[in-house]
View 1 (cartoon, rainbow, N blue to C red):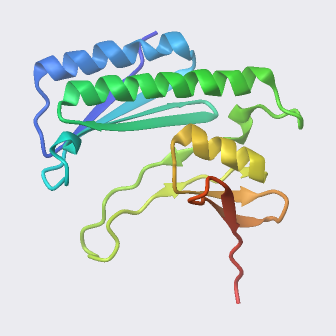
View 2: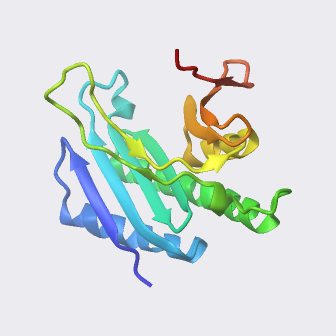
Length: 187
């Protein structure tokens, strides 16, 4: 089954060679995880990067029923960035499959507990807000939120609906490697 691949570029042209390379490599992801419904590859050239080796950015996002996995890598060559991002997404697929098939104590699979995320458009009318994201929130406990945060590759924070407290919480990773939770309250 061929995975529909959406390729989006920012600040660079996508050559026919690059398009063929992306299609060929991303189509192979279906071998590792059947049930992938769509894949999106964002390639970006960032001229203002501090390090010249970080100017080419490749981000791969795959979606299927009940899961979303993402990886992002930077390199001085877009093909190298794509290869590294593909390796990272394959490792995330293996981790996801292991957790999914190994089972959980509460009887839910990770696929049932994963947040579906849709990316928003950049808003240019308001200079303060650079990007706006909307996503569906799936109820989960704190341990499931940590797993989901790691599967998505979010290193700094993760927003989720906490089933234990019945409220939206923010999970974040602390400098010492532990996790913290922010529990907002409305006045």
